[in-house]
Image (cartoon, rainbow, N blue to C red; front, side, top):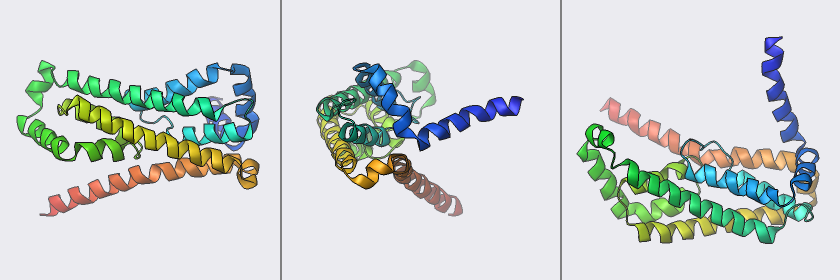
Length: 223
């Protein structure tokens, strides 16, 4: 009995992911304008709160934009673009401010070596703009870059400018691709399969970063 209760949520999740159109369209129709608030909240939490890096980012933007192309009565691409853009910018800014204030805590000051703080500051002074802009495209990593930038005392104007650039490109590409693919008959007929493929592809950059980091640590340990 307990096993059945534990398996039931997983079965329901698989059913939803493999029947997205039948599951999501009625929900969006019922929610109406509240759909945009829900989408805003997910993107904001994924980028602004370090405890939610597992929430969907690119995959959600792609799916929502695709739904806007296939079901314009449920979602509008003209509203989605600014919603995603503002949510990501505010989320990153909040994350950056959290980093700036956390590093001032006496407990962190005592337990975080000055050498590491200096290295972090040197890194963001030299590569901060690239890290903020390109980090936006790496799942999991983008959640921690603004926090680290704030903790490393990166210049606020510099962070704000490159964050706007990175988010602008990220949202534009995601929405454009989703809306374009939504007009293709194959995507319309295999929406669930395409969404699962996007989710898997979105994890590749994070997996590569983890592999490279592990490889470097292994090399250091052998020396």
